[in-house]
Structure formats: C-alpha cells, structure tokens
Image 1 (spheres, rainbow, N blue to C red):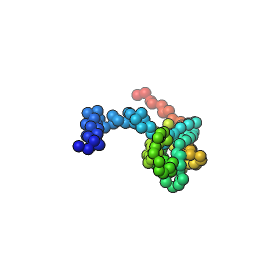
Image 2: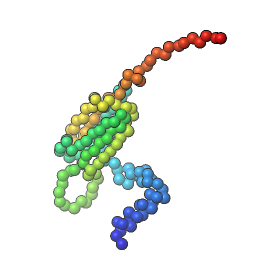
Image 3: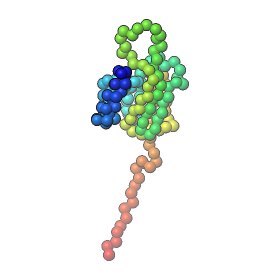
Image 4: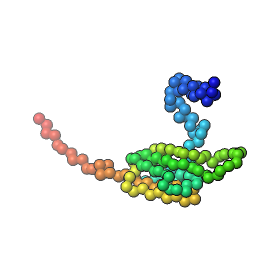
Length: 144
C-alpha cells in the first residue's frame, strides 16, 4: 500500500476524531507561516512589514484589504536551481496569509512599497461619519 495514502487516511481519521480545525493550532509549530510579518500600530495608522525575499515581479504579489483584514498572496522564490539542500531555514513557495488588523482601515488610502526584501504596507484607520460623537437631546416627560 502507498505510504502517502496511509498518511492521508490517518489524517482523515484524526480530523474526524478531533475536528478539522485541530491541526490549525499546530500550524505555526509544525510549519512556520510565511511570510513572516511585523505589525505596528499608532492611534490612526498600522504599518505591516512582511519579509518576502526575492520578489522580482511586483505584479505577482497581491494585497487585499477588507475592513479589518489584510490578505497577502504571492510566492517566495530565492531563485537557486540545482544542488542538494543541506539546510533550509528560509521558507519559500506559494503563500496566502490573512492577518486580522487591530481596527478597521480605509480602503482608499493604502501605500505599499518594497525594499531590500521587505514589503511595507501603510494603512490608515477608518473613521466613518456614523462613528463620530453625536450629542443626544434630552426630552422632558410630563407627569400625568
């Protein structure tokens, strides 16, 4: 029997027993997420810095922002062909990473720049008209 089929059957049984989200708890331990990111926050801005080495074609990197979620899609390719891997610590390959932001951001004011293997994404807090402070009128109730 194919050993990969046995592993697939084993994982399916574990999913059935523990639930499909069971493995999500171990994702960062078993395989670190890529790209690695740092998130910095001020009162009205968020700066996301993502480590994406070897990004040669910026059109192959997708950034999506939806309310309080940032999504990064692309590929890390260090471009080395041939040879046998002796040690591999720089993770590479296709990635899709979703990041929850600490507050909603504007979709019309986003700036992304790439320099020396780092992707900088600057986001601005969404302040809508409905979230502004409004004075509440107090009414008098007549006693009857």
